[in-house]
Length: 224
Image (cartoon, rainbow, N blue to C red; front, top):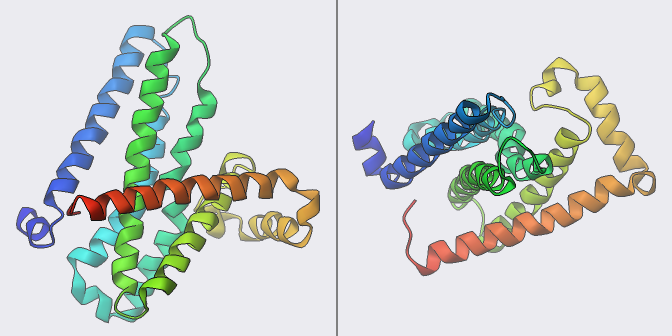
């Protein structure tokens, strides 16, 4: 596996993601040890969900032969689309930040932001992987438009996850109810101002983060 990661220039970023994930996990356990409270321990589950889209695109990149097997490739891409919003969702866990007598608020802020940043990295790196995959079929401008659209789509996914409490696997577990909630907001957008307000503004924020991250990557010749 190490040789394979080196071959595709993914060893350094993989080690970094592992180290940061373990560090955040230990920090969350340290909070439990000090307070006896499991509050914010759920961040580890959210981080695991954020890891999934990166895992799918890593398989595609590390196993280029899969790109020739259209059914497998389309299946992985479909799963990536389903789980991609989870990588960015952790940013909204800042909603849980509040003053507590158990821990200083600055500690919880650092804890949540550490998980959120790793989640964003999982998401952004996986989106770059998708762009690399599309580069063999489409020109750069079209790929950029697709990335912008995917980030806005992820923003909508964040909304339905945070406020409607739908999960990625509900497309199989409760497809009709999920479809109803989504279609209702598309058919009657003026009745769901909060939905589209958050979707648009969060989408703009995610695009700002992503394109800043990508420009930094290009300017510093960062290999991921």
